[in-house]
Length: 248
Image (cartoon, rainbow, N blue to C red; front, side, top):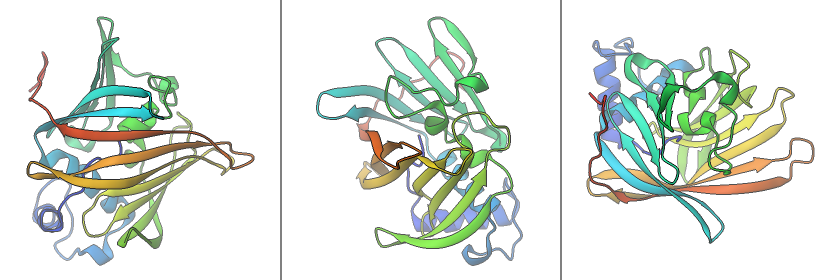
């Protein structure tokens, strides 16, 4: 899901430098943190996920009793969530800065159809849109302001749904200026009413990687603004490396 990982500032600045001198995506050599545009900010968020080759164990938690375990794989070319009972793999291909989401379930290996982007996963508040962070790939974003969250200075980037699929018409994204990590998201329906919010609550170091290890995902009634339900996405520990057929 959305920014499970917060890129250390030195790595973030090194990534910016790399992209400036010919990496993919390419920026002007004169670019600095202060004059990035919205598309470049989101590109750096996406790029941060490609720097690690690591597996983690986590869970989707609702209340005290409902805990749905998963294995998260962060790889240079993909992000993958693996669930059991029943078996299910949700796979986002991140190569070439493109969005391609597929699902492996019950012997089927196929793209997730657009009409399912807003479908909830395992009866939680988390949808396919949320888990894949599809909105990070929407074009023509705009920086609409700056904010401070948990002492962190953030850009606020607004993106609009280019294809009408899924629940969101517009999404606001808070991106940490110091790390490139996604700190918060608010999703709005086509009428501009807030229907979803997720926010980083905590982070910790797992071995040599700093991870966002707890996020809260909240669903709201668009008319009253009342919170209807919420789910926590938690990263618990590193995991033995898991590869399946077709991995590169």
